[in-house]
Every structure is written in C-alpha cells, then in structure tokens.
Length: 231
Image (cartoon, rainbow, N blue to C red; front, side):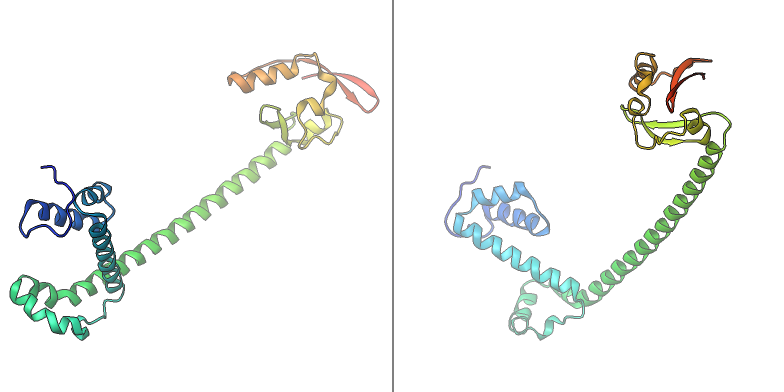
C-alpha cells in the first residue's frame, strides 16, 4: 500500500506506523538504503530528521554498552524512574534486563576468543609465508649459481625492449665482457641491426612461440674488432 508523508506520528497500530517501525528496526541494525528512502517518503522532513537522530543516539549507546559490558543500567536515574512501569507493561523485557549483563559478558568473551584465535592464525600464516620466502630465495640463489657457472652462454631478458636482467660468465665472454646489465638488446648489441636477431626476440615476446637456431652466425664487436661467432 502506497503511503504518503504526513505531519506527526501515525495512529497507533496503523499500517503506516507498522511500516515505519519495521523500517526503523532495519535502519537501526545497519545501513538499509531502501528503508531509509521509505522512511523519507512516509515522514515529513522534520520527523525524519528527529527519527534519524533518535536511532543514531540509541545505536551509539548500544555500541558504548557493548564495548563496556561492566556498565550497570540500574544506576541510571532514567531506568530507576521508568523501568518498573515499562516491565509492568511489557513483561517479556524482564528477561532481557535480568540476563543482559551475562549475555554481554558472554558476547565479549566470544569476541576476545575469536580475536585471539585470529591473531594466532595470522601469526602462523606470517611464519609460513616467511618460511616460503626463505625457501624461494634459497632456490633462486642456487639456480643463479648454477646458471652463472654453466658452460653455455645464458642471459635473462625482460619486457618488450628485451632488457638484460641476468647474464652468466659465458655470456659475458661472448659479448666481449661488456657492461650489459640494465641495457636493452639493441643498446647492448647495435652491430646486430639487420641480422634478424631483434626481430626474432620481438616475435617470441609477442607470440609466446619459441625460436630455435643452431650454429647461427653473428658478427659482434669486441673492442675495435668485428668478430664472427656461431651460436
């Protein structure tokens, strides 16, 4: 049923009041955009502002009470003045108030247990991650050592420009002991322009298809000389 905004609170027990109460509960328990819009359509701007502040105030009080379960509601003068008549009108609330502190303590105990458990899990995960990182580092170190001492020329390139990240001693000797670290292939070996070497690397990088050559002929500069080599 479509209800229009009216000034003042609706009649007790009316359909409009039930919708407002239900939406108020949903908004109190958490953000509910649909119910917020529904309340705006059912209440005048002033009444909606008052209701929103009332819900926010009660939510703040609840959060404070949950964070401080040792609080005693009996010391509140408003409770002393109004609780007895309220319980007489709504007997079901008596159980809530009589067991409130116990429930809050149990809830706080469960929350602390969860936090302790989560902390232990995170610590174990951190230890496991650190152990994995140490294992990976050890493997990378051993692998680099093997590559460094390999009798064949090996280099690792990265990116579309084919930048040198690693080269072993055999590759250094092949290049004439040039300083290649961080250079692109074109910067490191400009004399290979037109030999098809750059294009082969570009093709492997763009397609992912390997390229094999056996005893390929290259002319490399070593000092002031041009030397023919086969790889």
